[in-house]
Amino acid sequence: MITVGEARSYVLAHCPVLPAVEVPAAAAAGRVLAAEVVAAEDVPPFANTAVDGYAVRAADVAAVPVELDVVDEVAAGRASDLTVAAGQAIRVMTGAPMPAGADAAVMVEDTERLDGGRRVRITRVASPGQAVRGVADDVAAGQVVLTPGTVVNGPVAGLLASVNARTVRVVPPARVAVLSTGDELVDDGRPLAPGQIRESNRTMLVQCVADAGATPVDLGIVPDDEDRLAEVLAEAAEQCDAIVTSGGVSMGDYDVVKAVLSRLAEMRWMQIAIKPAKPFAFGVIGPRRVPVFGLPGNPVSSLVSFELFARPGLRRMMGFTAIDRPTAPAVADSAIRRRPDGKTHYARVVVRLDDDGRLHAVPVAAQGSHQLAATAQANGLAVVPDGDGVPAGGEVVVVVLSLA
Ligand code: AMP
Ligand code: MG
Image (cartoon, rainbow, N blue to C red; front, side, top):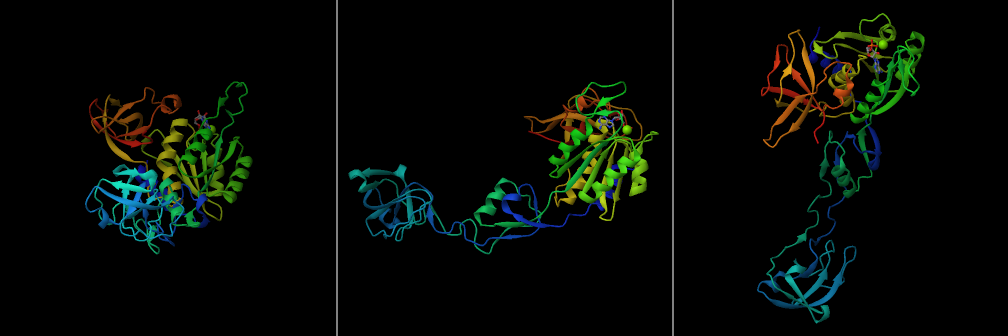
């Protein structure tokens, strides 16, 4: 048996970052930038008012109250031709360009409208520059606004739009073939014949792949037939950037995945000192050396194996710096029981951030590697070192799958 760390390093060493592509900014959501973004324009492009109110000369409102003539009115998107002279003001709405002559804006709350709007009384003193957003206050043309490795989330997409970056260089999403193997599997809703079960792993993994930021390519159920599996894998090795299989990598007699991948790919068949997910296969297939993740068939093992090995590998390929889930110590609110067996256990837990500012974890009731129902309630994996487990109130490191 090898450690998680060893298996993970092996995987990552064979998951190079995909070649970058230039895409329209609108198509970059969720992607990792592969090049700097340099602003082509100043933001804001002109000095403008930060408030609804009056553009004034600060010198006129050094002492209050004071009354000024209102000589014009400017909405956002317009500009005034007039210059604010001594004793004058221009009514301005948030975002309107500062009129010439004015050097401060006074918010409407600090004013009283007089003579039907022809005059205004200002009741609070203004200082030069007050409530004015200067040109390039946010971004100056020529400035590097984003660096490689940045993930394009909502604010980043907004920034790209604000500096008029029409296209960006990004690492594309990996196209990931997902397939399950097994003659016992049924996924079309028909009544189960003796020995058959419902397919769940591929359905689960398709979503896990998407959650990792990749594009799943659902190749369905492949029967335990060597020729058929070889065909599907060869096709996937041409069309996709990675392949995730579930089932057929352990010690069973009908583990055709093992037979076929041994023939078609450079595989490493691993036994990892963890529970669940001890068997795991990884290798590269075809001239493009497409990574293949051979996950075990038991649904919970499949999930844990995906989280520990496939997800970081796929995220590495897509240029993410954060390839791993966050991991943090948690208080075990109830005991996490186990016996010494030479393995690290990844117990499925419900983890939450408590009012005490700490994470608290409780194991889900059923910890069998076939018991997906209980695992579906979990949002964390408690890393329980070899030994007798963690007592209630003890501390345990948790891989946080989600927290919201
Ligand atoms: P295997 O690794 O193929 O020997 O499968 C181990 C166990 O997982 C068996 O009980 C299989 O029936 C089950 N299994 C394998 N693949 C799937 C799948 N895609 N969905 C649900 N159960 C599966
Ligand atoms: Mg099988």
